[in-house]
Length: 331
Image 1: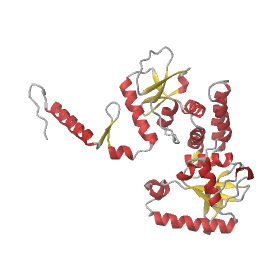
Image 2 (image 1 turned 90 degrees about the vertical axis):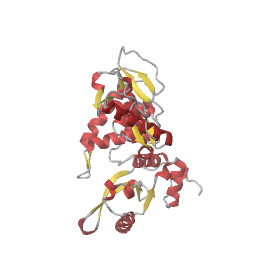
Image 3 (image 1 turned 135 degrees about the horizontal axis):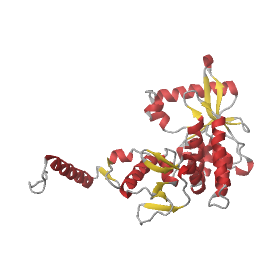
Image 4 (image 1 turned 180 degrees about the vertical axis):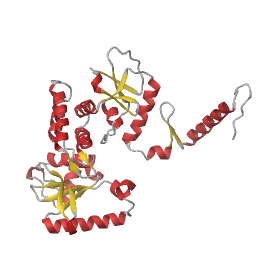
């Protein structure tokens, strides 16, 4: 089907091309092969479905910010978490969160949630051309209001960003401690603020050695079940002078704990071009070597085991990990 264009309606070939493109977009929308977001963002439905929740929300934030056309609104809270590239563990913001600068006029918008709060200039940054709360301000806001699992994942990820070196697999404890100190200073200036007790607890637990939200939430569940605080990214000698690193060591029960995200088998950046069967075989040989040399067995969890604390505990029991007596669950 073609779109009939009258000369009086379109005065140039460029305008004709734009109208033709818009018509094709409307056809794709009608067929369900295109997703229209706020403003002018357009993606195929397949492309949109392939994105992580954080990536989808970043697109929504950018679209809304463009449509608002104001410097008074600064992206904040869960939306700022997404813009900074931090994880939103099982958090799906229904609206874009912004904090309004002092004295700014407000207008209601069904896709925007406005916060009224102090916003000094040092708490405002620019990420991808968007005005957003700074990394530290974003962490403090997020760990007060998000669910506990999501809050710890955000804090761990922020510390990981400033202190972990992927090339050397080393953790800069000095850099992490400096950031933690600044986060604590912010909390000390907020007595009685909403969620302050949770935020303090999260900072007590935060550790940037965690490599992703799966490891963060798994560690949280281990602590809630009564295990001692695990050591993270623990090295063990491998064959021929190599070194293996395990996600966590459960010293009180003598077990290695690891989280297996699907990305390690499918993400090209993580697989290095290897076939999933090859990755599984390498993992099996690594696990057998470490268990033989340390005497510690492995317990492994995946996303399905983080659905709840009970699901997590049941998986540990299936792996024959002794749970603290008060939390033994029937299989």
